[in-house]
Image 1 (cartoon, one colour):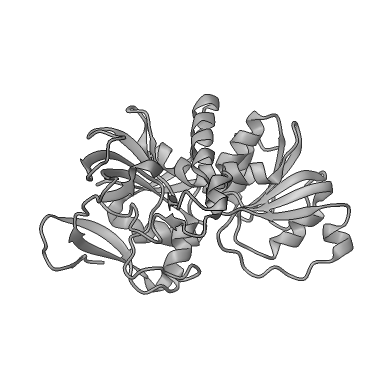
Image 2 (cartoon, helix red, strand yellow):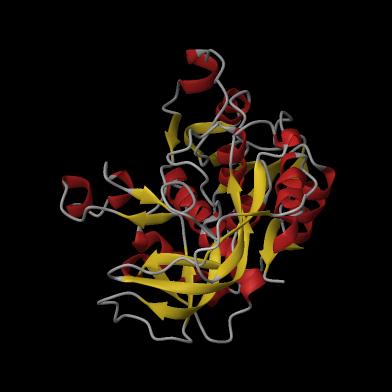
Amino acid sequence: MAAVREPDTGTQERAWIVETPGPIAGRPLREVQRAVPEPGPGEVRVRVEACGVCRTDLHLAEGDLAPRRPGTVPGHEVVGVVDALGPGAVRFAPGDRLGVAWLRHTCGVCGYCRAGRENLCEASTYTGWDADGGFAEHAVVPEDFAYPLPPDADPEHIAPLLCAGIIGYRALKRAELPDGGRLGIYGFGASAHLAAQIALAQGATVHVMTRAPAARDLALALGAASAQDTYDAPPEPLDAAILFAPVGDAVPAGLEALDRGGTLAIAGIHLTDVPVLDYQRHLFYERQVRSVTANTRQDGAEFLETAQRIGIKATTTPYPLGRADQALADLAADRVNGAAVLLAD
């Protein structure tokens, strides 16, 4: 699709916006020319090197997440190099490489923030939803919510860590997997294949339930003990499970697979309707189900340190920035193995 040129207000760049949310087949993502954004007070601008394509971006494009502003640029797994500082920004210098993630701002003073639960802040805002993200040549971020990255970091393989990795890490914490426990993973895309590597490094036995044959192959290659279809029972009871697929129908299957006292953590921001649960089959014996809401900056820092220490490897499918719409379409159709990543071109 040809780019649509907006009125020239100075230096221009390419970006993709969600114009009218709808089914991905209707191409809700549109390429435009826009003015290069300028950083405000306490903000930095990065020249985008890579941006992961998250299922949340797909939910925004298709309208599962109600847009919070018109013409938003999606993308919240951004790796870039600082090329401009806003007034008062001192944490980074031009040329520094940093990461931009989903959580963009919190109030810092509410009870949740003061208790270390800033992911629940009612005033929180998010990259690629409340503000433009990384499906563009430049992105702007408050410096306090950016992550410093090593100068030799590989942008393509670091980008998925900034949401898929961080959220998978938080989901694993919420699932309360015991040491050496048995973990079930439902859905095996960008986030799941990174969370699985953490669990395996911690000595867990991992069983994967997913509909995509290529994803099952990837799970086994990474060290999963078994891989089967989404609704198949794992070969043994589970101590914990994480649902990454945005499919409410899988909740009963995940709960039924739990051993006594097990926990199912639901990692997505959007989930289709959950069927009626049978108390005896799904919840009795102190099984529990938990949601996962965004992440804290502490989660991000802990995960990035863990990823570097244990050598997490992101499996990626690269696309040039000019094919962002195709990347989303492939994600919707389960044609992406691992994580889709947009690269500067």
